[in-house]
Amino acid sequence: MATSRRVSRVAELIKREVSQMLLHDIKDDRVGAGMVSVTEVDVSGDLQHAKIFVSIYGTDEARAETMAGLKSATGYVRSELGQRVRLRRTPEIVFQEDRSIERGDRVLSLLNQLNQSRQMDDAIAIEDIDEFDDE
Image (cartoon, rainbow, N blue to C red; front, side, top):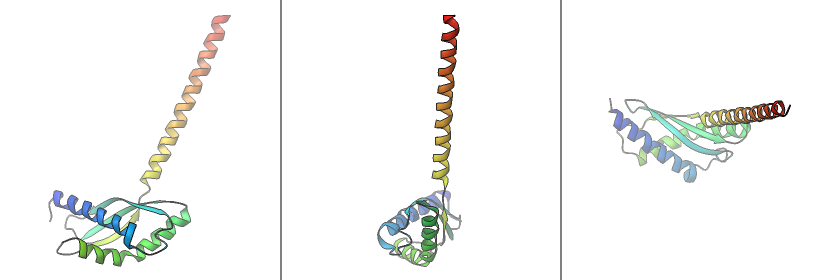
């Protein structure tokens, strides 16, 4: 069992290397259908498994196409990681779509709408008070 510090260092190293592969090495056109970025890598305590979370910007069709391309490139990515990262055993990798950025954006837009609605209510209340004072 590796220490948590080592696990996090390996996760960061995998994140950096896979990001580089997405930019320069993976030639599958499906991966380029949506803008892809690696958001997080979860590595198991024994360093045998890695979940690579990717954020994909684009339509639902482009997301599905990109995920299919990433799943087909899993073997290539794992073999490249084996060459680039010095580990006794290269971890099994799984790509998972990360939609947290979209959820965060949605929450921010809802908060902005709520804030605008509250400001309008305050403005209406002030107008009502001004009209009451005039009488």
